[in-house]
Image (cartoon, rainbow, N blue to C red; front, side, top):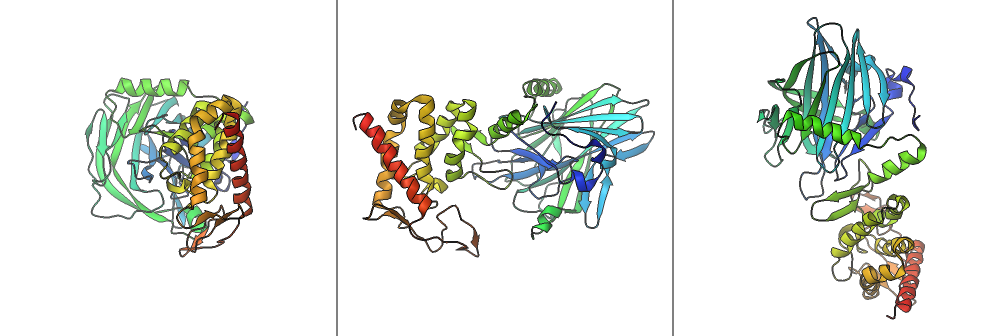
Length: 454
């Protein structure tokens, strides 16, 4: 039983399959996202899209991985790409099944060959693993894997250039690649000893992303492949492909990591389990005790407003109060002059710091009012004082007791679209939701202060 169902007879119909996308995350800011037939239709799609430094930016490292089945000296490319005016190769015609739980799994059938592909993002590591199992075959079968690399910001597109390093360098049962010196090494390895890597650097031109084009954006890019892996598979045999920022020490380690990780995955068997699984993917834990909330995959990053608004739903509803506390603590630690930092500041979002109080009210039901006041009382008072004193000349408390927020160039409310550097809807003045949140924050702080002798 599953909550999401797919018409398996329609998997070969691109009008059907290209409109259905999948997402898996590593819980530290990286993700895998593509369509259910593994054809990228957006610049944000990729098998490995991850942060590689502390800049807050996320990069498409491994865009796609082409699989080719070789039998009787004939090649059958299972991949699917869009180029201007054409899809090539057209591997979707070999797909017979797609399952999303416990991990996205595609089954291909090429004549008498049945190949199963299981895609797995490893939690708390920047690592993608794909296990290929030759379910059935009646003669010698070889599998070829060709990775396509981008190494660019997820919002950008790349073109063939002389600066990219197309070489592959030796690693344990695989290679390491780094197109540009500012990036870390990407280790491409397999679990099958003796798997051959054939160096064959080349640019492939004009991959087309129709969803970007439909939205009015540029939608073509070039991708670099440095070569391909090739090995023979016996019936019932599996091989695990690993792409990681850390080198795996042995082929056995690769197999053990895949087996252990997939065994811990939950089965999304009903609507609630799907919601709970999806909610957990928005909470990310980065090095340095940074627990944050991604506003949305694949476009958005971390936002103070969305963090406070969403925390109760994605943590407390599953009784993960420690996750909620860790995220709040990180925001509090970053406070400067009584105000949250970055886009959690009232200087950027007039209402964001006031949602902090709303979150604490939900947390109170789980840890009690005394614990909330002892842990966050000082921060609550500092935030209210910052509004009273004024924030960046944009947000201030008037004598009438209402909060006034105004800026010519920064949209201070949730209606924050900007065109050519100017807010589409400035809403300067007394915004009703800001003042509702302000009134709530004042009342809640006064109540806790009164109850605890402050």
